[in-house]
Amino acid sequence: MRHFFPTFAASVLILAANSALAHDYRAGDIEIGHPWTRATPPMAKVGGGYLELTNTGSVSDRILGGKSPVAGRVEIHNMEMTDGIMKMRPVPEGVEIPVGETVQLAPGGYHLMLLDLKQPIAAGDMVQVTLEFEHAGTIDVELAAGPIGSTATGHGDAASSSHEGHE
Ligand SMILES: [Cu+2]
Image (cartoon, rainbow, N blue to C red; front, side):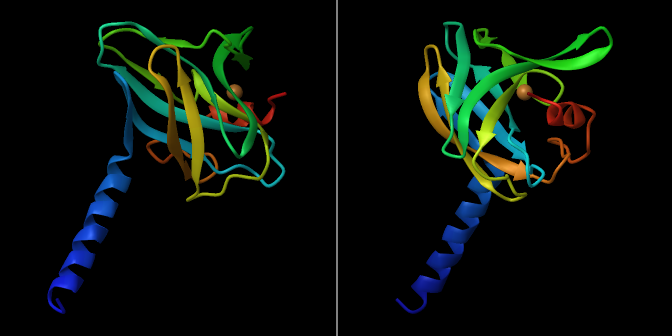
């Protein structure tokens, strides 16, 4: 057993590292890829949530919103250009995920909005969110928090400054 145990511990660590890298979920026929968020300034009351949704089923579905222990409420928002200004607007009807397609919730477009944050989000946090779908039901996922201003690929974007003006 003395020889066995260290080997076992090492393989558990490798498994844990791999699943953290993959960071995917499935709710019914909906595949959820790399949910992430970014750190917020100390006094911020809102944060964004971003992910990829793929419909592998035969019925169109819809992400309707969600909830989170760190936020008063979670809504779906969209960024839209109005008179040359990027504005955010709640989308209570949610976002359709057509059969066989992948929909991105990403900076500059549709996103999850965490409102009334109870505490700032720090880089490295795993923020728990329960997502709600019309057909696939609910699922708990964790948003991996990148640094302030980060995007999925690691560089800043124009959408983040618009977020600070929200509400
Ligand atoms: Cu928003």
